[in-house]
Length: 280
Image (cartoon, rainbow, N blue to C red; front, side, top):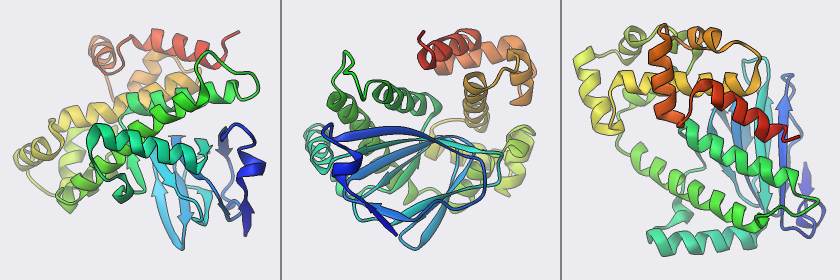
C-alpha cells in the first residue's frame, strides 16, 4: 500500500485536480493519503474499493474520500470509465464545512460517502474541476480556493440529502431506479420501469411522486437526458443518432426536454462543451 502525502500531491497550492480514464479491468494500486479527495464519474461504471468494502458507482456519482481511507479503483462492465478527481487539504475541507454549517446549520460530518447527482450539477462540478486543471500552473481569473469551496458546498448539501432520503425510500423503489440507469432498461422505457418495480403502474406513480417529487416518465427522461448529454460531450455521433440511442423517438420532444434540463439545445450544448474543453 502506498501513502500519498500532501507535500508531494498538493504542493504549495493546497489542491490537485486530475482526469482519469481506466480502459482495462486491472485494479489500481491501493493507497491512502493525508488529504481529502472528491471524485465524480462522468462515463461508465467503476468499482470503488475502500476500507475493505467495494461499491459499484455509476455515471454522475460523486464520492468523498477521507484522509487515511485506503482505496483503489477498478473498471466495471463497460468499455472504459472516465472520472475526475479533486484532492484538497484538510484546511480547505474544514473551511468549507464551517461555511456550510453557517448556511444550513447541519452536521456534514454525518454525510454519506457518495451520492448520484442530477446531470446538470454533475456537469457543473466537472467543469469546475476542469477549470482547476487548466490553471494549476498559471492562476486563472477565479482563485482556485474559491472554486473548491463552491464544489464542497454543493457536495455537502447533496451528500446530506442522500442520507435523509435513504432512510425512508422503499428498497424496491431504490432498486428499480438504480436498474433503470442501465442502457438496456432506459431504452425500453416505462414498461420496463414498471416490470422492475414489481408493482402496478398506478402504485409506482404514487410512490415515486412521494419520494422523488416526479412522475416515472420524468425520472426516466432525466436518465435519458443525462446519457444524451454525455454522448454529446464525448462522441461524434449525430444529434439524431444520440436521440434515438437514448430512447427518444421525436425530435421536437427531445429538444424541448433537453432545453428544460440544460437550458440550451443539444446542438448548442455540444458546441459549448467543445469550447470548454478546447478553448483554442
